[in-house]
Structures are given as C-alpha cells and as structure tokens.
Length: 454
Image (cartoon, rainbow, N blue to C red; front, side, top):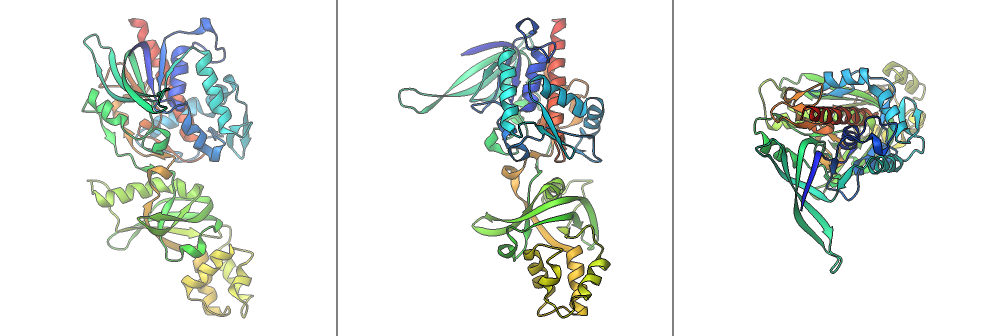
C-alpha cells in the first residue's frame, strides 16, 4: 500500500494533532471545507488518537497554567519555551481549546476542561481532525524513513489490523510519500501509550549527526531506601521535599525543592518490596534525581557526581522547629502520638518514634529529636519509578539541531519536530501540554508555509 500526502505528521498526541490542524487550516476557529490548505496524514501506533492525554491530570487533563512559574521548563529548549509561553502562553491554549469546543475551568491557577474529563479534550480533538478532513493511519508504527532524489520523504510503516476470519492481528508494510514530515511522537514516558523512543533511530537514519540528549524519566515517583515501608505506605502529608546530592566529601548540594501533597506507597522491584513516594512536589524534583542517578553510572565531563541522593522532607513547612519544640514541651509526660496528632499523619508520627528511638513518654531530650525529624527527615533515594511511571522524559533533540522559529531540523530540510521529542520538560501544571500544542502548531504552520515556494 502506498499513500501520498503533502504533510505527514508522526504521532497523534497534543503536539501532533496541533501540527496537523495548523498545517491543514487557515483559521482553527472555523473548520470548513473551503478552509482546507494541504493534504495532511496523521500517523500513530495506537488505535485512537490522543491516548496519552487520557492519562494526564489524573484523568482530568490539566492543559494550561495561569502564568509562568519560575523554572517551569527545563532542558536545552528552556529559553525558547519561556519565550513562546510569554508570547502565546495559556491564552493561546485556552483559545485553541475553545475553538475546538472545549470550555475551560480555572482551579487554583490550573486549567482543566469544564467537564473535568480528559476524554472531552480527546473527543473534541478527534472531531476537529475529522471535520478538517485530516486523514489518519492508526495502529501504524514507523520503522524507517529516507529522502528520495526529489527531496520527498519515503516513510515505511508497519500497520496492524484485525483479520476478520481468524480474529488475529496481522501486520503489513505501507509506504507513505510526503513532501514534509513532522515528528511529534513523544519521548520514552509511558511506553504503553505509544511513545517508546523508537522514532529516534528513524530520525538518526535520516541524519546520523543529530544530537539527542539522554531521555530519562521525569514527573515520576522516587524509590527510597526505607526499611519501614510497610508502616508508612498510604500515609499522606503536605510537605516540602528537597533533593540533595551528597558529594564525596559529604558536602550536600541542593538540586531542587518543591511543596505540596506527597504520599508514601510500596513498589515491588525484582521481587522485593520497596518504599516509594510520589505527589506533585516529588514529581517536580524527580527529573533531577534521574539526571544525578544516570550521571553516577556514566560520569561525563562537566557533570556533577554524587555519592548518593538524599530526599529531605519537612512535614510542617508552616511551622518552625522552635514552634514545634515549644508545643512538644507542653506535652512532657504524654505519648508522642498524642502531642503530634494535630501536626502530622499518625503513621508519620509512628515513623518519627522509630527513627528517633523514642520509647515511652515525651521528655525534654526526645522532644528535641522529634522536632528535628518533623522538619528534616531524610531518606536515601535509590532510583526513580522509571519510564512507565513517568509522565514525560528529559532529553530529546537538542535545541542546536532546530530552527527555534519553526522547529525545522537544520540537518534534514523539510523535517520538523515538536513536543516532548524536543529536549524540554516542564513542571506539573499543564506546562508540557502547553508547549506540545504551541510547538506543534508552529511546526505545522511552518511546514505548510514552506510548500508555498514549491
């Protein structure tokens, strides 16, 4: 099977869908037949478009944030992302969503669909793709690509379909001939959503010299070296978490810090139960843990090396250690659990007793120990919860490889990249979806505009 198209978009996540829409329409506010510009083909390995969107925001799809927080973006595209956010930002995303029929709701600065369902966003995007006449090729994995003598892209995909006779999945190769190609297939996060990093080799097949920065888990939980995991699993707390790298001379370097609700859980790794912690602040610092753990295995020039990683948790950010100590001293002779019932979770209070060696009732000595542990309890970080648990990945195509105004790859004329495939990852709060939509829209518009000269 051979398919010809003007623009082939690989990846039907937010970046790919935005790219397809912008490449095929003059004005996203009116999806009309006469408004169509180019023939666009949207390719994805899943059976439906937008699968990964269903997993965001706990199934609610937090697609934008009210304003740009400090250090919201990380990676070589950080400055570019900040620039586009200031120029387009949440207003662009809210307008884009409204134009496809999705009303938004602002919940403490986080924008969600008014329906509070991620599936609403996916349905609206799916209808916009249909209304605009964008063709789709689903259940199709790109396995290689090349350029012919005329400069067009020859893309080979492996397409799966259900055999009606024996009801088994069968695969066959298909060839796509496209004048332009947009790569928007994500990084390595949540491979079951279709983004497994295999597209990297396809891009490198077009130009071996393209620089890819290591893709590592981000926005994920952390695995801790904690013997009392059975005790604290399920415990929730509002806390400040601070990730430190411990150097050979025992010097501590703060890598990242954030506040919010955290939860302790258990993960089974290689048959062993391990303590893990997740929640928005943990997810925020996790990308720095990934980088430090990777660099501990592969020391690169200019990269910091740490003997170990330490997560420091402040279970009472709004209280000073002195305030807590004064409170505890009013409870001398009482059980610690009684004194702490209005400050920390019962399970955390029990953990403080174990870690502090506090037996019996409160006295002046163990009150000091307990106050210190509430404000500065430390855990050794031994790993992240990996790619499957991560919402995005660090790394990807380096900024130096693209034209930041169009996201065209400098070494592959006519090829563009967008979204998570680029070396950029954002904090929780809709920043990643915002950049995916913006970069996809820009890449799609640039790809279409480049055809005017032909």
